[in-house]
Length: 151
Image (cartoon, rainbow, N blue to C red; front, side, top):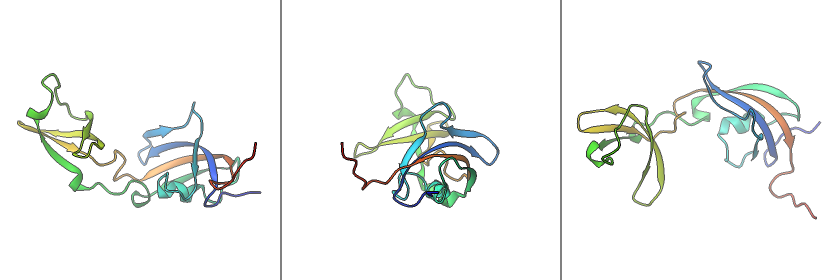
């Protein structure tokens, strides 16, 4: 029976949750996630978790912080003046915003603290600092990116 290896294109149904049981993402009701194993398109622990699986196999994997989105980086916290917000916007704790840096790159942030004259924005990935748990089901194994299918 064929098993997943680096370079294979796979389709996987998944249910992702935190260690407290909170669901953060799931493919339920959607198409399975398709990616090339080892290409860097998913977190390292997910790549490792599907490697060796066979079609139809189900398993649960635990991904530590360093194989997921990494630890929270204090350098990704930014103090931002309230005066720079649009007049019609009232900052609230937990509010998610998109900021643009000097080169035009969009950076998602969350308001984690509100002070008198400023807010503290967190530009870390929302799952940074978290160990993750995934229930996986391997749906299919393809041949990989270099495989050519002739019409």
